[in-house]
Image 1 (tube, rainbow, N blue to C red):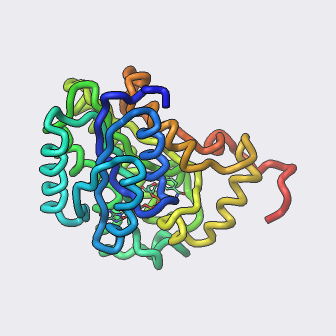
Image 2 (cartoon, rainbow, N blue to C red):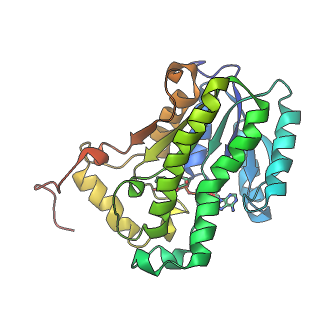
Length: 265
Ligand code: NAD
């Protein structure tokens, strides 16, 4: 490790398994010297998260379902106990939509799923920031994960694109609120990666192939690459940056047209 994050302590929310973006970020943060705490969503994931936590000497501070404010309070109370000196970062890698609405037309989105998707995928970051503010040290950093579907229409992304647009706006508002306390708020806009959450999106294999053929780097990105950029954003190396959305997408977001040399899909 580089020691880039030596002496930094933080929470990583959203590890479901070893393909999770949260896991890629946790591995990088640990490799650079950070001390970590994980939460898990429900008993089924506890069994997956515990052995992963052990690999990184990370604490497991309990069940957190962001639709249950009491469980958010409980894990932040645990975090305050685990890290009495305060925390330096929180990484939020949480999103959800009913997969029946991640296909077809956005216009069909139900009010129920709209509300639930925005609550879990957007408001939860603000709910977490409220708790984090109380135990975070100056120089601290909040980080969330977003996707290009927030900026442009993408097939099947639907309500999740609307939720990510709101999440990106909330990054800017939270950055303004917390900046005077020397707490920074940023997001990584990751290119498509095959994870549990992504498997709910219609035609995901096609989206991966499309990116491979059309991104400037002619490939997709890995959770390790997202992890390394996350390590930078939670480190003091990025101390002049807040309210920023950084793309880790092999350059896909700069492309305006299909690569004419790409094979047909
Ligand atoms: P993942 O399935 O590994 O992680 C999603 C996590 O969200 C899981 O750990 C799950 O437990 C958690 N979660 C869902 N509902 C929750 C709730 N009510 N309370 C607490 N936790 C809840 O998938 P991932 O792709 O690693 O997703 C992490 C983040 O990255 C998400 O915000 C996702 O939108 C974003 N992202 C993913 C991609 C991609 O292509 N995989 C691209 C850009 C952004």
